[in-house]
Length: 194
Image (cartoon, rainbow, N blue to C red; front, side, top):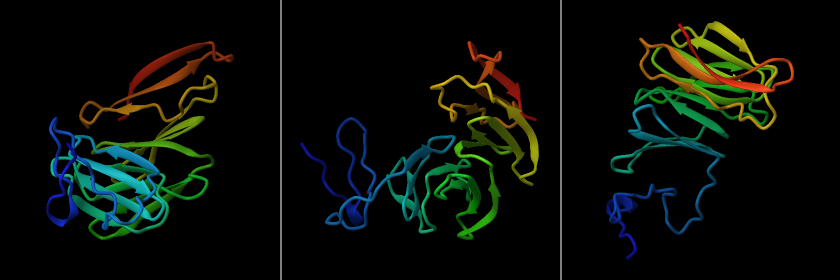
């Protein structure tokens, strides 16, 4: 049995609890390209990066909550269900833009020397992962607190692999780091980020 379309083109949930997120305003149009997907920290929203910008959907109702046509978005990270979103979208993926969805504008932009692999946030910190470095920022001021060198990273290891604890009081960050000059031993280290 297929799914039935509900009001305003939203798709009703089929048996089993899995819904479909509407990808285009008009079902006759071809679907938009998806460049990235990410849930917010409590999984109440799904952010979708696209060549024209980004969309935010509710995971409960699959309703479109926000659509922004701000240019290419290759990485998008939400801060819970707040208006703050971290975007990476330039061709070289070297620029991070902190975006306010209520104001529909950028708050600040930061340039990095190499490609941004991932961005993580909690209420106190923003973490930007590059292939050879991890940058940890104070979220309110976007000032650098720590830079962790990981220049001896093992080949084939995803440079975006990281988890930041959602509880700002715990301040835990877990990311694989390589010990030794030849990259022979790989450790996952957890540490306080402030």
